[in-house]
Amino acid sequence: MCKCNCCGSGKKNVLVYACSGGANTGEIADRAARELMYDGCGSMWCLAGLGADIQGMIQTAKDADENLVIDGCSMDCAKKTFDRLGVTNYRHFRVTDLGIEKVKGVRCTKEQVDKVVAKAREVLSTEK
Image (cartoon, rainbow, N blue to C red; front, top):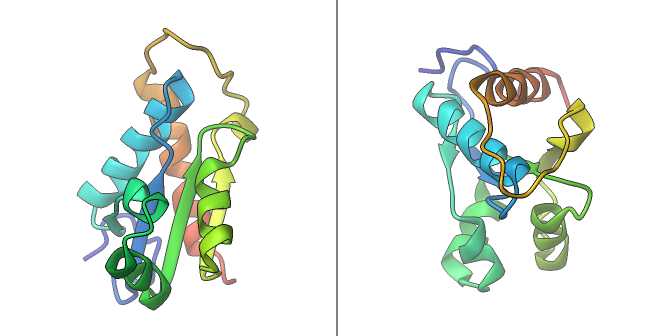
């Protein structure tokens, strides 16, 4: 059951995909996705598997009730992967759009992760 009450009390099959890039924003997206998974808001899935064109993983994304795609920055690597594969049942946002600066070689903070988790819960709780 979803402890965060963001995805219809856990009734929907929500998959969470995150940028895990080399900057702090990738780390933030990844850690936020894991927190959402631990809270029962969805299952974290492998973005690299989609990028590698693993057909079973692509089909899993297409079959999900909803996919949440969290990109670290405006390069939108995760979103572009979904678009390239024709997977359209997703919601998307960027860490940098929340006022978090992308910096290489800097660790993320709990406050930054919490901010992204809150945004994800907001995105998942609104009707599409």
